[in-house]
Image (cartoon, rainbow, N blue to C red; front, side, top):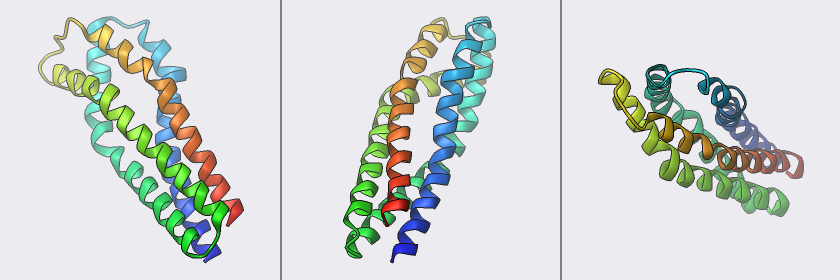
Length: 157
C-alpha cells in the first residue's frame, strides 16, 4: 500500500505542479508585464489566454485532486495516518483553491474571453484584470499548501 500511496501522491504532485506553475508565472511575470500594455492588448492577450487555459487546465487540476484524494483514502485504509492526514490537507487546499478561483478569477476570465471574441471592447478590463491579479497570492498559497502536503504524503507513506 505504501507504493500505491506514493505513486498517487506523485501523480498529484505532477498534475498540481502545472496549476502551481501557471499561478506563479502569472504573479511573477504576467502581472507586471500587463502593466505595460494598453487595454486592447490586455483584452486580446488575457482573453485568449483564458479562452484556452480555462478549457485545458481543468484536466491537470482534476487529475491532481482525484489522485490526492485516492492517495489519502488509500493511506487511511492502510493505516498510514500521517500520509492520510497530509493527503486530506492537500485535498482541502485544492478545494479551497477551486472555490476561490471560481468565485474571484473565473468570472473575470469569462468576461475577458468574451470581450476578446467580440472585438476587444471592455471599458473595465483593467480593473477586472487587477481584481483577478489580486487573487493570485491566495491561489499560489493554496497550491503551495497542496504541493507541500503531497510531498509529505510521499515521505510519510
